[in-house]
Amino acid sequence: MTTKQSPSAPMTNSDEIITLLTEIRDAERDHFLEYKRVTTRSLELQQEAVGRQAKVIALYKRALIFSFCLVAFILILIVYLLTKIR
Image (tube, rainbow, N blue to C red):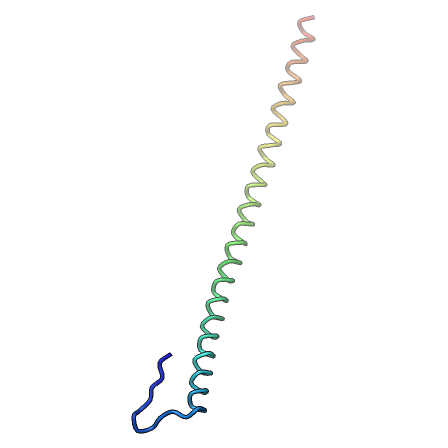
């Protein structure tokens, strides 16, 4: 802690207390602003992640539907060819 004292006027206890409280207040304010910045960024990242997850789920659903249709087509084709051979 740096306190500015002039040689002719030493600080009194109340001046020191006021200086300390001012420094504590400024430190708390800085800490709060940093906390606010970090939590805002964290929320933004979470929202981006949710958006990406929604896109991946939509892609997965389309791939699953396509795969199901392909398997159904192949099974129908196998059944058709087996009945045609007999």
